[in-house]
Structure formats: structure tokens, C-alpha cells
Length: 615
Image 1 (tube, rainbow, N blue to C red):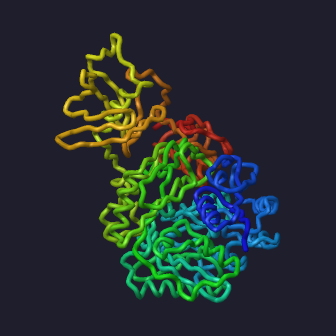
Image 2: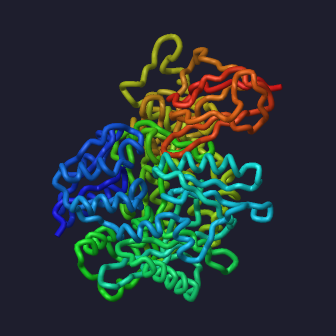
Image 3: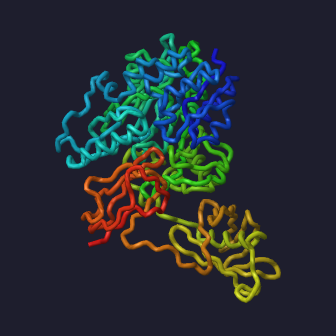
């Protein structure tokens, strides 16, 4: 029996594993980097061990340090979660060699399947060795790991070498393995996968299908189970192929076999020899705890001959600290509040007051809804996200709500090209026109902020406040009267610092308001309070390229130097932030007149990187 377990991971998945262990009475040990010293997973675990450093290569990818931590803390088992070392056969062996129980498949099975190139060859599928024009478009893909890192779509042969270099660098930083390969890129297919669970007694469960077609940068955003619109016979065929793949490598534990379904054919993508991010939708449909079952299998228990019967439908949305309209740029800062309405499941690695840093993946949480039908589950999830209180960095919340309500998604007609087609429409701002007034009235009722009087702002005169919302400035006017606050064209029914009730055109609107510094959250809208009389600020020369996020300059493009000619769209340098590389390009044809970046330089958001003088 497992008495104490070390979680070799961080964030949401570490918290999720700790929760199940505590339910089972298993003591837990967390590991943490210096950046995660006060992270939620370290607070939830019974004890924690420091991994000195911040970069994954120094910490969560150091299998030797993690094994030492497990032994020092008295753990007798290790769960790798997903990502990092979860599909590293060498780490699995090291855990076993140290006399610890490994919560996962045998190292030989990981070795066979964790490398996508070896997995494909095992199943008779060969990667492309030489790329011709007839092969385009192709996908450059990391052989290890997942999560969309180390992947690049190439549509011109001239771009292949650069894509290979970028994918290798990103894969090496994320997984400690720079091996990449090239395969045909199937556009606008559906990403369908099969969850398996196998014990050491010869039983292999298939736990239905999942659809993960809504993706950005090849990383899943919305997942659901079962895959909608998939006829019974093709679904059975995918399950049969998944069992064949598992038996081919004597698999045990939880795993996922992924396919791309297009033109009536299913193309094998990979087998993930670990727990998937989207496993909660399967848990909801089958009424099981996959982590608890992983632990039972590792302890040698046999599964029942057949899995439980599925019921209903489940949908999961990944809530990211990112700006979809700005190239999915990750966002950082203090997460003041994260509250989701009752009736849905929330898996998160953050609590109110935690800081979203630059070192790791920007996923804040997973929100999961389960209902008897797909339509009900989708409606429930969209409603919960819309009413959620998320105060802090910008997130993809609005994108998720709009995606869930898009006719292609509600009709089950989505594919992997969904965001390529609809991103602009899904990210077009649609702010509530009454939000600035609600912010101003809440401010007026806050004793710490309300200041009126003197010659500029007499109580009998209109009060004026300015806010930025969705890229536009809004000036708000209201008055203090004997009976309360008043505004033209709107009845003010109630106003306090946290809640404002307005009536416009006979319709009553209630707003929750929260202020953090100069940012004001009014429902789902986020406003920036502006000074009434703006002071001149720092101005940058035309053509200035500013860092879109905090990060590290990892490399400059070849030939980039002050005085060099550049063309519009030409890559100049790459920033690494939150385990992804972000390319900074020239805004126009011209000359690079200034360069304030070098490999290894740490920069903050807004840092001046370079200046391009347009020709």
C-alpha cells in the first residue's frame, strides 16, 4: 500500500493529485522551484522540498533531484502528473531503481511510445525524411512531450530550416529533448482521442472518446467527452486501435491514444503515456477518479472486467492568462480573485492573491461542466464562465464563452481550423456601454476614493471620470443629489463600492464591481481608470518594438544588428515566456536603427527592444 507520494510536478495537476491522495489518506510531498516557493501546490501538500532555481531545466526536469527529494521526505511513490518528466523513461527507471513505486506505465512502454517517431514506426508509420513541394504543408513536431510546444506548421520549403531550429530550441527547453520530426499536416481535421486504463492482470479499459479540436498553437483549449457526431462504428474502431497500441507495448496505467479524423479516415498521431490535461471530462462521464485508479493499478489491484457505463456529456475549458487578440500573448501579474459559480468543477493551481509568473505555462484553471446532454453541458459551462469573477491578468474567458456559443461548436461541426477561421470575430471587443458609469458610481461610493468639493468639482456640478475600455477612452458624468447619485438617461437604483444597479430603457442591470489599483472589474469587463488631467508620459519613437510580455531574449535572427536593413514581417528576435517562444518581427520595411536586446537578457513588458525606421 502506498503511504506517502511525491508529486513530481507543479500547478493545477499537482493540486489535483494531492486532492485525491488526501481523500485516500495518502501523505503527499510537493517539489517546488524558487519561483514556486509559495505556490498553491506547495501549500496543499503535507510537506514540500525545494528544487533550487527557476528554469524547468534546473528544477522540474531534474529527475535526480526529484528522486533525492522523494527519498529525503520519506515518500514511497512518485506521480509525474503531465508534462515535464511524465514521459521520460529514464526518470521512471530512476524512480524504480531507488525502490520507489512509479505511478505510470513500465519504462519500456514509455520508451516505445513517448518518442512520437518510435511510436509511429512501431505502428508502421514513417515520418517524412525529405520534404518536397508536393508534401506541403507539413508539421514540425517535437518527438517528446506535448502541449503544443516544439510544433511549427511549414507552408514553404524556404521556412523549413528555421522552423526546425525553433522547434528544437523550444522542445529542448520544455522537455529536455531537442529531437523533432516532420509529418504531413492534415488541415481542418477533428482531433479525437481514446482514454485507456490497463492493469497488470491483462485487462485494458477503453473509456470512450474525447474531442479536442478547438486548439490554439496546437494546444487544446476546449475538450469534451464523448466526441460529438462520431458514429458508433468509427468510435469502436478507434477504441480497438487504442487497445492494440496498448497491448503492443504491454501497457499499464492511464494513457491516451490520439487520432486526427479527416475525410472519413483516422490518422494516428501519438500515444500519451501519462494522464492528460483533459482527463476530468472522462471522469465526469464515467463517474470515476482516474488518479485513484492509477494508484490502485500501481499497487497491483485488478480492474473490473468492464468499466462503468458512461452517462451524459462533459465539456472542459482551459482558462489561460493570455490575450488571444494579441497573438495569444501570455499575461502576468497578481490574480486578485478567481471564483466560479457552483455547479461546475474547477481544477486550479492558483488561489486569490497568488501571482502568475513568467516561468511556466499560463493556464490558470480548468472548468468542467457535466449534464445529461451535450447542449446542456455546453450551456452550463458557458454560463458559469460568463458569471465567473476573474480579477487580475487578462484572460481568454471571453473567447471561451463565445467559442462555446458559436454555431459551429454548438452544432458539433468544429475542427482544428476553428480559430484560424473565427479568431478575429471571436476577439472583437463587445463591452457593456454602462460599465464605465457603473465603475464611476462605485468609485463615488467608496469613502477611500470619493473626493469632491473645491472649485473644480462642486457637489452640485457634474462629476467627471475617465476610463479606458476595449482600447477606447470613455468620459463619464454623474451628479450628487439630495436623494443620491444621478446620471442622464439612466436611473441609479443602488450604488456601493461593490455593487451597482442601473435601469436603462426600463431594464434593470446589476453589476459586481471590484477595483485593484487603477484596474476596475465591472462584471466581465475590465476598465483602466485614467487621470482626469493626463500628464505627459514617456513617448517612444515611431517604429519602436516593445516587449509584449516579461521574458528572456533567447536569440537574435541571423544578421540582425544596428544599421541593418529589414523588411516587414522579418523575424528579429525571439522571447521565451511561459515555456513558449514568441517571435518579434519588423513592423515595416526599413532600417534597424537601435537594438536593445541580446541573448540571455531578461526584459519586462514594455521594455524597448529595438527601433525600426521605416523606409
